[in-house]
Length: 102
Image (cartoon, rainbow, N blue to C red):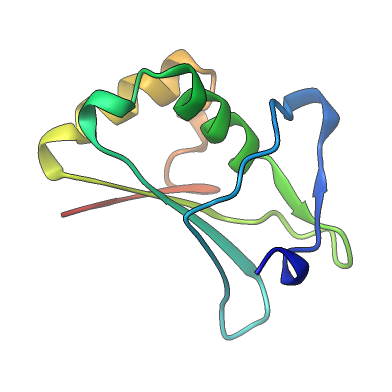
């Protein structure tokens, strides 16, 4: 729920007020944010803004970076990587941005 997401918005990369598809805590209490996207949605303005917003979240109580998981079909993975790179987020793939394929 939104009340359990006590994240601090980093003003330099915050581009809107979007609700993630999934917000959960792992076994260590670290928030996890996830979005599922289809290939034709990857280049929309809203999806780009979501990527920028969700990849730059920090837990306010601990200062821990909130991992951002993106789920796409395997055929869309290269498109997603290109889109993230275009948005200046390519260097975060594999650390604070995790890509999952179906």
